[in-house]
Length: 329
Image (tube, rainbow, N blue to C red; front, side, top):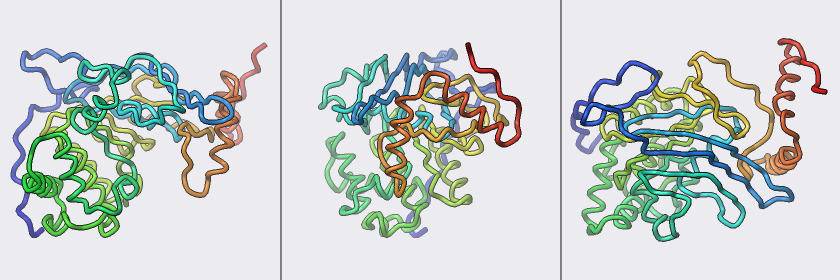
């Protein structure tokens, strides 16, 4: 690393024993939830039939707490996360329930208030930074633009802040990498730049949507350790989405398994992952499976209540596990 190395991190209180990694409030009592989601529903209406991707989600996250949403692909984890920033197409999405962040109802924010909220109060680390970052601007310019959008600073000061963020996330040769385009960086370096962009305006809530999926195992561990270190240093509330129970940020974090758009109880770290039922929750194509994704949405919209659970049972039977329960009368 050619730039100056990051200084020592300030000490933080030890993570208390138990299932939640929460820092105590100054008075020594647990603080009220910073994120309070009650009966959140998300329905996509852009297709032939409405698709209910999320139904009745309740979730509370306190300051300094990390919550990991764990579930199979298509269970509604990313849809729930994106709802906190209202990133779904407004004319093709129906959202209901209550979504409070820092005492503000996100569902009632005006477009201008929503723009101020994104990045400053809540920020997101996307799954694929090569698609999330703008390919025609340098990474440093994108971070500086985000800073100047929320704070009255000069271009030189914003660039200096961007350099400090690159040093903080341990990007080699940070001064040179500020002028690099996203395609000129490796996968791990792009993800570190994505983290720097997410933390540029000092948010209070960090949303991580499977930030290690496209990385090799060694880089995955480095990114997870970096996220944990930054979370402790800044006291962030973090919601971490993953389908791999072995990739949660910390073994004492809250683990909320998702299935078919609904959260379950806290999961044991050794619990077996659920069988995948083949239905995608997000109405956006991914790669070569575009036609198959659309078909899954239609099947999901027409599927009766309880059919998904019975489909999993039948697939388990094909693997030679258990017995098929009788059909209800």
